Amino acid sequence: MTRTSKTFRMPEDADFFDRVYAVTRLIPPGRITTYGAIAAYIGSPQAARTVGWAMNASHLQPGYIPAHRVVNRNGLLTGKHHFRHPSLMQELLESEGVIVIDDKVKDFAGLFWDPSRELI
DNA sequence: CGTCTGACGCACG
DNA sequence: GCGTGCGCCAGAC
Image 1 (cartoon, rainbow, N blue to C red):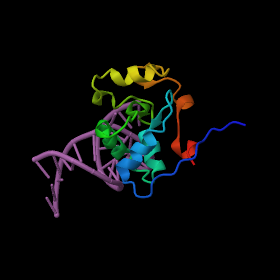
Image 2 (image 1 turned 30 degrees about the vertical axis):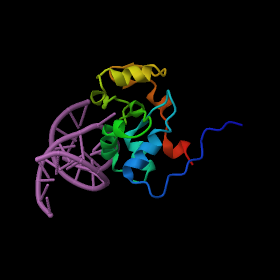
Image 3 (image 1 turned 60 degrees about the vertical axis):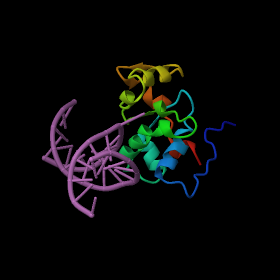
Image 4 (image 1 turned 90 degrees about the vertical axis):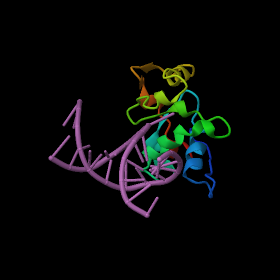
């Protein structure tokens, strides 16, 4: 029997940013998701932009937040300029086996990790 | 308090 | 395929 989803309970009192970070931490290495998918999962399907804003402050949060695993809906590494070096986002992804060509994730569909589908 | 700016995404022309 | 406008949430000024 294959288990493709994991149980996960979002803290009731978590604010928007905390919810974003909670989901982002659950993205498995070598997989990717999108700003919009995270926004939709935490109940604000039109707040993809705000998810990006949250990523901008992710390095100030306690613990490790794999922000490099979040790309835009086309698989583009739109957040690369916010890492210590513009190439770091791609390097982190490639270290996990993700191929990036021209700032775009290869096999985006196959690597896409949708919290709405993976988390219960 | 008003206004602008985003690591977005969608509708529309 | 490209430009424009808007909602979403938060922070800067």
